[in-house]
Amino acid sequence: MNPLLATLGGKLTERWLNLLVLPGALFLAATAIGTTLGHRHWNDLDALRTTLDDLAARPALERTGTAALLIALVLLAATAASLAAQFLGGVIEQYWLRFARDALSHALVDWRRRRWGRREQELDAAYPIARTNACADADDIAEDGEAGAVAISGRSLAQIQALTEARNRVALREPTRPTWYGDRMQATADRVEAAYGVDLAALWPRLWLILPEPAVRHIQSAHDSFSAAARLAAWAVGYALLACWWWPAGLVAVGCAAVARSRAHSALEALAGLIEAAVDVHGRELAGRVGLVGTDSVGLLGHETGDRMSELFRKAD
Image (tube, rainbow, N blue to C red; front, top):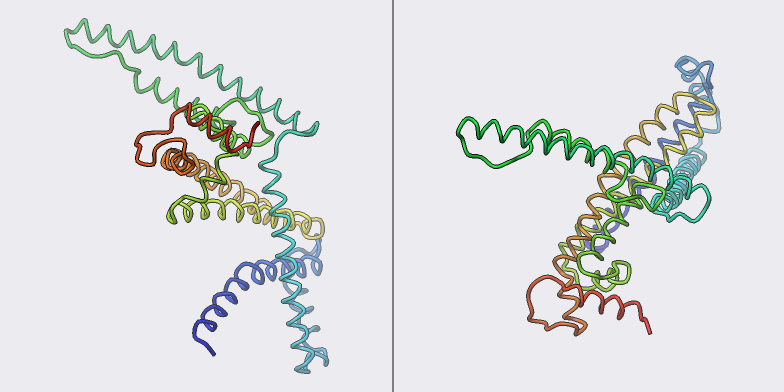
């Protein structure tokens, strides 16, 4: 066999096992254990061992063809379960990033806006207090005959930082989408438009075509991590359903959901930062490619040029 084909076949098999077979097989094993033991005998290892012994003692399993067929069916079932989790993960990913188009989503936006508003009010109230304390400290320094600039004290700064982090856990800006994930991407688009006057949705497909390979690789890696977190959330849904028959699966579901949430936050934060950085670094290069500025010009993308790029890319009349 061609060495290249052998290498590719080995890598594809490894990815198939890691991404499809192993997670699906683990879920199938948990399903088999859960349906066998149930809630009442959830930790009855003797009953599980007896069931396995009875299954292994069946004459049909002594036949090589039957055993091979059973293994093939298990592999197919595990692959089907993983494909279902991937499909559900894609749905969850879109759900996390959705706009508010229904009554429930609008209610979530209103609730998040109230939370964000309370955090913003607390932060606004902390600044005058910090400023007053800073001026009092500066007066004390002046009385001692030592020169110094008015600065926020360490305690006040820590309080402001804590309040800022609490507000940002809700959203970086006033929420307009039902989830933190959607608002984080919306904040990136708003910041890009405020800085350069360009519509990120219209700009991004064109900018993606000229990004260098390292930038593409980092952005794709962050997006893949976000998708993987959504798939883990899909497995959490599967284990939550299994908990209806075997309650320990609920603990697995909670663990998967917590890890998925943490990974999704980190991945989307990295993705949003990389997208904004790509516009900062390569936005003017794209303007030069489409003839709006000179190809040898330097500096950041101008606001007027950004407006012209948005108009051009939207195909506006």
